[in-house]
Length: 353
Ligand code: NAD
Image (cartoon, rainbow, N blue to C red; front, side, top):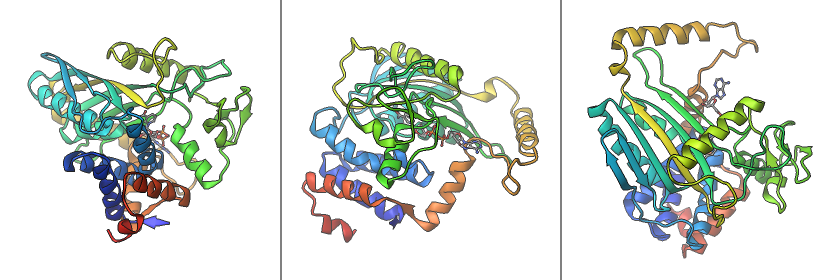
């Protein structure tokens, strides 16, 4: 089914409010989830809401929590997300880091103990909107590992995303690299499973450590494993996410001494800085325009499909889906409706929104 952005937002907003969020939090979380769908990242969109409600019921996600400042040391800012909605606490911690960065030129901000922060690109977009550059390294804890190390046969860490954001110039749109360090995000396997589709080769191992194209191995016990992107190089980046975001935020890594209660907890290690404190603004813009146009000028390997830059596929998808609507599979919609019923909403009342 296709659903409009406005309708999906209203449905999610209603469920979130009924589940204990105030207007502000429900708006932030529903905006974030729907923007993930609009930009083509269905794995981090509305599909997550039933999981959030389940985690909330289990006490693994706590509505109404803000980003709590743990240490304010000039250009170093340390926050605790208090297991609140990640979309809220990470946005708040980013706002604080951006405001500080206007004075100091650079901020190292850490956030620990946030429930799932969703699409990390959203936080890169906050710095882009402020004309700042940001780098984000994230790890995922509190649940069983999902990704195998290069050379291994079972999962030892998670999909540890990285995001790097560079603001737009007058000519060149912002560059927003936002990616899991696994070949695919786990949610993409969930989307494929819900659609009854197989995955491409080379993405997943089954519980025996053998390659498979069946996405459901990721949702069974014992589970399979996703593979890191870029072989030993992607694995190296995933390891550094674990060390930067897990160790240096104080939030902890996925090593087995740390509790795994079955929630989704993200820790994020972030640099935000003002590029104008490094180089002259006009020169920077010219150099960025000239470089991006040089790269995009490469003859396309598939005739008719031009070379893209990170952030471009999401902009295209956004333009398409904000007009045509957001595709939601039946299984996902049914799960959202069940989550609504679980918090005491009659599904027919959502149809009227
Ligand atoms: P992806 O593979 O779809 O895209 C990764 C990056 O590559 C993006 O920046 C995209 O703009 C760029 N890209 C894609 N196709 C391109 C092309 N043809 N040419 C040039 N650039 C291109 O993304 P993903 O790795 O599947 O991650 C999906 C989302 O999952 C991200 O938003 C990420 O933050 C999120 N995620 C979150 C968590 C979490 O714990 N919160 C964990 C993992 C992933």
